[in-house]
Length: 390
Image (cartoon, rainbow, N blue to C red; front, top):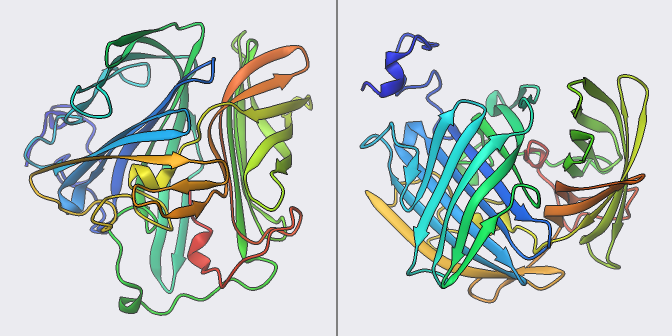
């Protein structure tokens, strides 16, 4: 099958661009976007992902405000229109690669009438993460690459009769684009179909994931760290992009997270980061918006979000659309049935303070299982596959 991309000299294998080198059913390629205001009222999360070997393209849009998450999930056959980056009503246009993108949506009949048209313009060159590859019992459980980028949004959002103009000076946005195989993203085999997965030993039976993408007046900084229950670091990387054009890798990350008592809900984080010039930056990060609930988007570990509970990347017909409302009540995410799930951290926008500078960040942190330093203990066995969660 030929696509428009086949007209460009960018082939990597002896095949058309419609095919990938891996036959793994979890192979996927897609985007995540988050757009938010500085006032703490509204944030939007949205994504598109192609599961090439399943012939499925999925999308979602979530409007988060006032403790509610109004979510629409969409799915379609991919090969019928492989050149279109859309699962209607969500559409992505690449206007200038790695620089300018347009996102649009029109769902007047859902959630009070959410519509938007958002122009995304880059603030810096993308940060490309290191490739991450892991095997379990000879089977690839993660082989992934991703880049992140901060942007300047403009355009508008309509909520019923209310139209909100997106001011570039007071709105923020980040995105990531990832591709590869991940057993935590995509169609899932039943556990009984696989060789039994071993559990992590005590002291390693947990994962802390921390991602910060801060927009400050004089710089943009991205960093992430993964560590196990004992605090042993598995992943640590990042970069600073200064307003004057300088770029400096992050060489050290130290975190101090504060939680609501008897919970894993983060109230604020202090992160000390050092760059390659030996300069120390002391960032205070405080959640500012209704947080994201990834289960509501259609992917997570505990519940998959789709109403049929069948997971990601599976065929739901030539076209499928569904909507519902999730809630976040402080310590728990609550699905449309009323079932409550403990919230294990925070995902969403945050205020950032560093000395006299004030800015905003996209902030992710989660603890699964144990973490000795913060006093968390696993409630049961933690399979080794938890660690490659990103």
